[in-house]
Length: 187
Length: 349
Image (tube, rainbow over all chains, first blue to last red; front, side):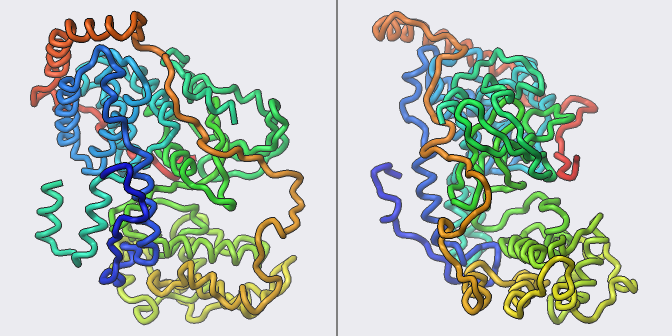
């Protein structure tokens, strides 16, 4: 979505058929959607951030994303966690120039660690992440990177990813199971 | 607040002690504790003076004992949520400083719009809604309205309304106050996951009538509640979350209309507090970037570009090799005997 689009002019799906289910929060549906649009603009990474990193390339990012997706799958995490991981990683990389190739994977693994703490009920321990990076970083390094990333992002972790928007729109379709599963597959 | 900017210059070389938790921000000695304000489940709150500008702040010390896995998720959610909330009635996080931070909020989690199961043990027990006690995981904003009812009742009674010690005791107190739930007033409550853990047939669980009127009219130190006030508490403390008063209904309630003093804007209230913490405007932590660790090199754009072109291919291959080293399927197997996940125990004190 273009950042020049004013948040208020986007047509809003308004919950009408969902009043039976209290979790759909139809009472606050409009406020929530307006807020989601505002937050989306505030949590956008810089699309040209690789220019800030002389050593790194987009190709390396693709490699790292593949690795993170596999890790995410193996740990059976929620889809929201993967989207949040990518967002935290990209926003951190937009703010912190000149990350070295040695530390790039540390950025990725720290992003998934923080994303888990935000989204998941059960959070993987640091030991597991140390194991997953093949001993490339110590638990101490990951914990320090966690602090550093949180400080760099100013604790701004909230991010309404595609899953949040998809759920909002699917709620209007009356919760058809097959449609829901198909849409989630494509997202 | 200038001091908040310092957070962006944290380097990865800080010492790893609990007292230096969030990098190289200000030491807590920069604040002088004036008194203890209260104690929550997750930390102790102090009133303090910021020595650099003499402003009064709330200082919250997070419990950090036995944290092997970095920042506890309750703290992480609290800080990130408070960062985004901006309302005169909600405390504003000014900065996160050495081992401690300034603010208060519970175990808030961003509410995703349609349902998604949430952490089961939330809310201080005294204010926990009956559906959460019975294990409902898709709890809603109606649970917050229950908490609001408990707190409103506490203000009227001048003492906690439902000070349960453990979950079963909490339910006994609720029943003693409101009568026992029935299928008629709360359909399908027996289907909730933990409903059969509570024995509704014991004498303590048998109480046919609500005693809330008596409780709130004979309180020590408090004047008897007016009929409208009583009605508001009753409408908030409804068993069935679907029938409980919602925020808009509460604001329209006759208590706020028919009974003085009338609602007014906060500045019209004469507070007896000595001062309010001065919240600066704008971003609390600031954004910005800093040259911390990493290898920032000079040499100008052309040198950088050349370096990039020359090194790119080699670097890409090296990086791929490094990642691939742990990207074979078996590398993702969990080590034998490892404790893969850690559930943060929310009742830990």
